[in-house]
Length: 68
Image 1 (cartoon, helix red, strand yellow):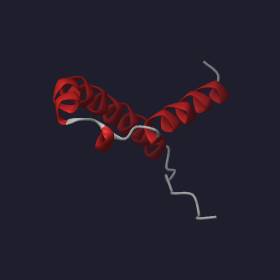
Image 2 (tube, rainbow, N blue to C red; image 1 turned 90 degrees about the horizontal axis):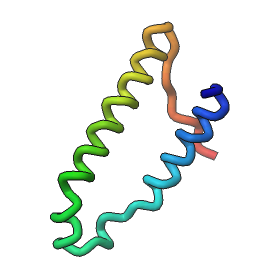
Image 3 (cartoon, rainbow, N blue to C red; image 1 turned 60 degrees about the horizontal axis):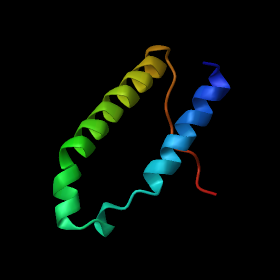
Image 4 (cartoon, one colour; image 1 turned 60 degrees about the vertical axis):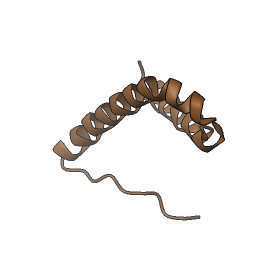
């Protein structure tokens, strides 16, 4: 996968997560999906941490973009 493709795919994942509103889910739906949601969020956390650690290992910082 090219660097540009990876960035595009990461941006798409951010967009998808930005559209997720669990407050709109019923309690039953949330309870039914909690195991799968937890697994996905934990996997995402692990992958993001690995990528961030790789950046930091090269002596670079990860910074939040300046507010527009």
